[in-house]
Image (cartoon, rainbow, N blue to C red):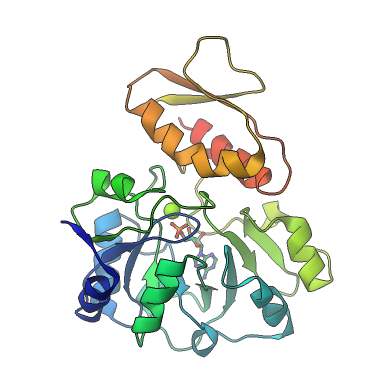
Length: 280
Ligand code: AMP
Ligand code: MG
């Protein structure tokens, strides 16, 4: 299936089809969040268990989740790479795997925003990779896995998935590290976070983001080895998945990956590297 323009993508989504869309984090496999059959197609394509909830992407997610004062504080980062888990209101069960909370985000990519403004429904979209595989940060990455229409928005500017903050419990906590780091979340909320390890996000498996090769996390890769080399955190995040894919395509036994400085998005980079390395 070809690359499509934004109006074609909108028309396909209105008909209940699945379209890959760019966001600033990674490419998403999008469907009308209010169309149960369309959302089921996303799960089927990905090979994702029905119990792993999808993120609702909207120009304004307020009709679909209960926003409290904390949610409004973090909504200041929208459009942007932060997802809020809130009590849900009126989306089909299939989006959330039946749970009573919903993850919502306003993506910052101009093409995604343009698309959302043409639609009168929100999109449910997980990352556009097969379940457990490396996330896509270009249209070509998506087309390597799926024969579906892709709206090409260029390489993703952030490169790792959104920060997920759970606001559905008494104390807020980060379920997944991303570009908006813990300090930024605390600053906006004006309060401390519950420890992350207490609350793993459903679907963030220890063996996520795994290429075929064994990934070995190191401070300094052996000279001459196939390796992802350390660079400033934002640059590392942007390059991470493309390099993992490119090196994996050479079918090596081992890919070395140098730990990122744990500053800002560097925490998210190390989190994804650890998951890629933690394969059986
Ligand atoms: P992906 O779009 O592939 O990054 O996956 C979306 C991720 O969002 C899932 O793996 C979950 O970890 C998280 N998520 C979505 N909905 C919820 C929810 N209601 N509660 C907690 N986490 C969620
Ligand atoms: Mg994913």
